Image (cartoon, rainbow, N blue to C red; front, side, top):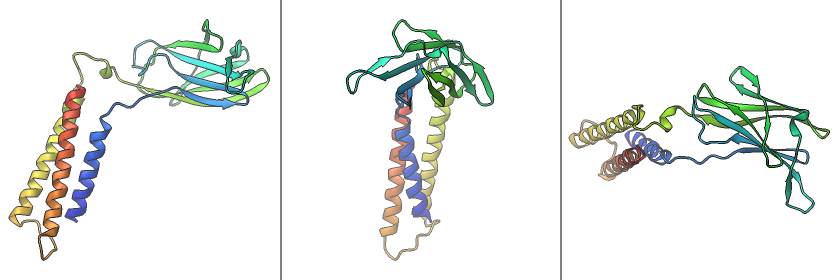
Length: 212
């Protein structure tokens, strides 16, 4: 059981160390008939309490294969509703000078997932789709100097994990934790697994510190 525990611990630690890499984001696109509808935030990541725009790009196939042109007057018969949990709001759409581009100004008041519900038609093509957009983040992503202690808490938790590993090693060496093996192979494997877990946690701490 100890060996399995160590292997799982090491794997989780490695995933954590990889997870501190900042992910990339992009607008979401759906196809409705001959039209492509792309929706997202103008400024990413969106931050709670800070004015932003929900932007739309609606195109149709061009004369040449693989080309697309912007569609104008789309929201004449198309309604856009912003959704958050059980709350909904019909949003006003403004036209961008570029054909096929539209936007709606909004101040997101809560962190989490938002969805845009589009209902109506575009030149006779029925539209009824819900498109999720990037999650709204807390202001901590932009705070400087940082006001959140989240990073400190994460590092403290990792340090506690290293301390736990050190205790496991001490128990192995003292014989308090027994390993069912007549030779030292299981012991060596356990120590090796603990070392990998510790190394992964240390890398995670370094990444967190650099990120701060």
